[in-house]
Image (tube, rainbow, N blue to C red; front, side, top):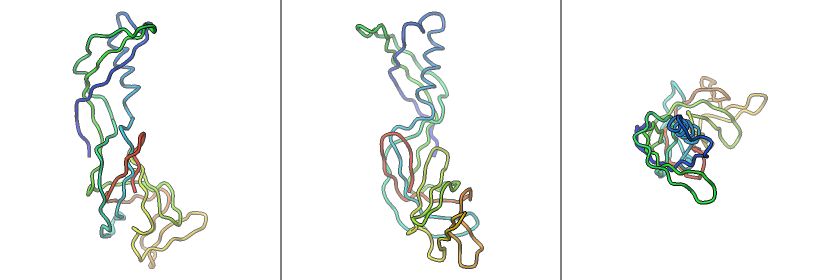
Amino acid sequence: MFFHIVLERNMQLHPRYFGRNLRENLVSKLMKDVEGTCRGLFVIQVSLCVLWANIEPLLLLENRSTWFVVAITGIENIGKGLIRDGTGFVTFPVKYQCVVFRPFKGEILEAVVTMVNKMGFFAEAGPVQIFVSNHLIPDDMEFQSGDMPSYTTSDGSVKIQKDSEVRLKIIGTRVDATEIVCA
């Protein structure tokens, strides 16, 4: 789910960026440092719902409070800089508005399959990496090895392979330090 929130960050700026464009340089550095980053890593456990197929959720686990910063939408305040002794760098407190993505337990995401193996498959939904264990894949789907590994129903009507679109229900997350991963 996406949220519009206010965050704060202390930005260090080298003296060569001081001058008329100080504000623009701070904003540019903030965008470069923050956009596309994750505050914590999600490993999300999901139940599987293939597009156009109905498959029941299998397991529910917990979710942690972490998010992925999608975009900075505005600067609320840039505080007075504090010179760091011995370096010449200045630390500015910056308060900014941004759009963040935070997956929740029970949320439905559409994802694209990136890899299939006998243990399950990996998929991506925006910044979120997802792993679906073969234990969460319906019993009527079997792993087919070969040039293009896949999970296929017994009648062949549904096939999950690389680049397939799937609909997933998040059943849990695991948080690490630098990225979002789902299972």
